[in-house]
Image 1 (cartoon, rainbow, N blue to C red):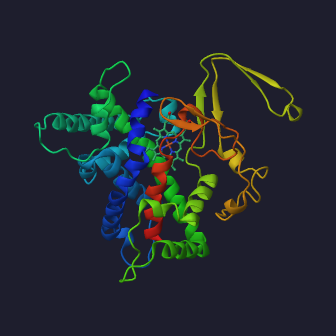
Image 2: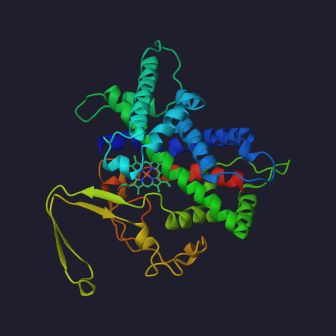
Length: 351
Ligand code: HEM
C-alpha cells in the first residue's frame, strides 16, 4: 500500500493538469503522422491504433521523456512481447516453456535494464544541472518508505513496468470500444461534436480550440459516453483474491438461495465479476443497449458518504454499487482520474 501511495503522486489533479498539453501534443503528433488518420475515409484496425496511441501518450506523461523516445524503436517491440505474455495461461502457469513466456521474460529483462540505465543517468546528473520534467521516475527516486529507506532501483523498475501495464491495457481497450460504439451510433457522434463546439468553441480557422482541464468537466455527454462504455465493456472483468484466512460469508438474500452461509477455506480463490451487476436488468433498463443518455435518468446508488484511507488516500467505503468498473476497497484503481483527461482529447479530436 505504501508503494501505491508513491504511485498516486503522479495521478493527482495537479499532475493531471500538467499532462494535458503533453496529451494534446502527442495526440496531434500522432494524428498528423499515423497512416490511420490520413484522409477522410478508409478503414483502420481500431484496437491496434488505439493501443499505439495509448502507449505513446501514457509513456510520455507518466514514464518520462526518455521512455517516450525509446518507444519509437526497441521499446515498442519489447512492450509487445510483454503484452503477449498477459493471457490467462501465462498467469496460471508462468513457468510453462512457451515461446510467449520466454519472450515475455526476455522483454522484462531488457526493459528493466533500460529503466536502470535511465535511473543511473539521472543520478549522474551534475549538481545544479536542470532536472528533466518532474515525472514518475524522479518522484520514485526521491521517495522514502515509512522506515526511512529509499526505494531500491530494482523496485522502481518493477513499479514502472507495472504502471505501464496497468494503464495501457484498460485505457486502450475502453478507447477502442468507444470508437466502435460511436461508429455504430453516428447520432451520438454528432451530439458529441456539437457539445464540443458549444463548450470549446471554434477558432478563427474553424478548428476546435485547445482544451483546458476545467473544460473537461463541462463535456457532460463525453463523460457519459465513457461511463456507459465502461458499463458494457469494463476491461477488468474478473477480480480474484486468494483466501488468506478462513472466511465465512452470509448471503444478503437468503430466501433466494439454498444455503445461507458459505465457509471458505484458505485453499480457495474468490472471483468477483463487477460486469454481472452492471449488465443486469435488476439495475439497468434494457441492459444490453449502449445508451449514454441512460445515466441522465439513472438513480444514484446510496452507498453513503463514508470514506476510508488505506494509506494511499481517501476512497469511498461503500461497495454495494452495481457499477464498479474501477473496483473497490484497498485495491481500487488509482488511475480513474487519469483515464478521463486521457480519453477526452482523444475523443474530441477523432470525432
Ligand atoms: C479505463 C481505465 C481503467 C480501468 C477500467 C481500471 C480498472 C481497475 C480495476 C477494476 C482495478 C482493481 C483490481 C483489483 O481489485 O484487483 C484496478 C487497479 C489498479 N489500477 Fe486501474 N483501471 C484503469 C486505468 C488505470 C490507469 C490509467 C492506471 C495508471 C496510470 C491504473 C492503475 C491501477 C493500479 C496501480 C491498480 C492496482 C491497485 C492495487 O492492486 O492495489 N489503472 N484498475
